[in-house]
Length: 288
Length: 280
Image (cartoon, rainbow over all chains, first blue to last red):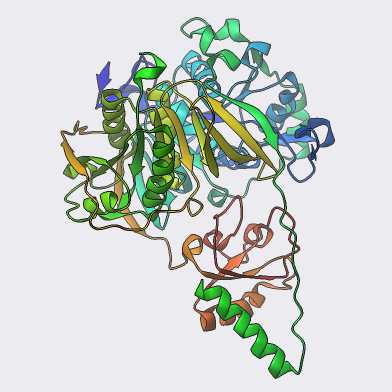
């Protein structure tokens, strides 16, 4: 169906429409658990990475997304549901999210979700969001530090047929009429109004994520993480579109980029002579 | 449709205020190499309003055919409007390969097009090669640049965003001839978002700078950037920074150099107080 020019495949019924506007906003935050990039080790021979070499943590950009959600909730009330896809261990990232202010956490975990590229990942996340139903705003980090694609957010929006604004660095206004965002697009900063509902991807500039308190951490330890498998999503979703089956792209080889060795050069002589030689060298480079 | 029915290379020409973004010419350079190798034509899609002579520039830089959506509603970037018109065109023309720049705009728009076309999209490619079977091999950094992934796509069109300032554009040839096809645009009144205002994000254009004077953790205090700024001013360059100092708030993110900030390709780079670890 088409409404307001946007294709809304079944979504029109489930987002917060007009009469529901008085309700507190329902926010969904997408979060991924990633290996600590500073620590993770790579096998340069085999071209693989050793996931056990680094501890797992929530993707840093997703913590900005969650903090943005918490700030909206502090202003307008409402609820935050965090959705993640990953292995069972990703539960710890969701517990962290609960400690940081999320109300509900859902982990999509199933071997059949494995090997997913961005198309299959976004389809899986979108299917879970459809199952959740009613929402006003979906917030995600601009990208993950492992996959580095920045594609999943906008792809989720397209699967759901909702508008999105990427690279949001500030939320200028949020009320029941909608959101006004500041986003960075190349050399320009855009002030964009997101009417009523949609998805945003946020940059690190948007906020400084707070650390959870010990009390909240302890509380989160006892909270329930809902686990959804393929069977929980297939009512309305096509199981061939999950995981490796639903992924048109595949990595067939990994290489480690060669680091070009540095070639030092020492300029000798009196300070004036050496400076002259150095400047000449720089001028040569700049002429190219 | 079978695989063989998809033919040709198509690129997306990005514009801002009616000026073609330089990445568009780089895409034509790389797209042209691929098209030559496959023995197919290179086309280009442009959305905007009253672009006049700028359209010809795409031909001078290698496009055989321009599909121009000339409409007031497309003057400024709008994800849904741009997506819809490009998807309509791709479904008519069925290119085998579709390229966008890995700019903010391309990386916001590309994913939506890919999902609408139910095809794969590889982000931020730094190289593209044609294999023996005529498939494209996409090479892109992952894990914050620590590894390079070599990727293949089994659906059509094969879609990529390509990193800015890495591909060579072709020399401008004003005698080059090509075809400009004016397309009817699908007009979407309400796209769900509305641009209220746009402004230049500050005068720093680090990705386009020829000279960068960059500071890292070796700096002692935020004020030390003044020394670097002085040198940059004398040389007509700009000031860059490594991530930790940006994270500390010593300098704005528009100055950040590296994987998570801006890809730079200066002729001259001064690294001051930077250790040279892979992630600067």
